Length: 146
Ligand code: UDP
Ligand code: MG
Image (cartoon, rainbow, N blue to C red):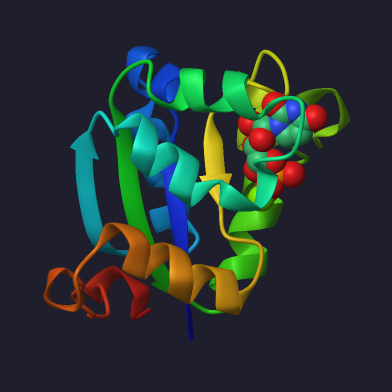
């Protein structure tokens, strides 16, 4: 079992597809272990994306991520990191495969609707960035038992 951190970006919240996105994860047996909706601060966005701070798109990325509320989501399931990266699709939605969230909903790279952790190590760091340990709850949904 793995954990991963997903952010439904401001255009996903504005677009009223929170439920659609979470439903896809639940159908793939990824359980929500923590969830919160709020507008993050510039300092929080800059810290979260610190690895990209030298990149030309950094300022626009921070502007976009603080432009409205986001959903912060910790998910737990089999191969959760790789599974969610596949389900989200390529960073540039022009390269995303049909059936992925970014293929279906993302207008461009900068506004690509969803974030997800790129490794188990990133996931641990990113989940701890947004959630306290006692905000995470592990359980196995009954619907997974066939
Ligand atoms: N991004 C961008 N332009 C780029 C590359 C990335 O605006 O050329 C944004 C995009 O929103 C992306 C985020 O920066 O989701 C983080 O980039 P990363 O390469 O980590 O992509 P991801 O892991 O989100 O697929
Ligand atoms: Mg990334």
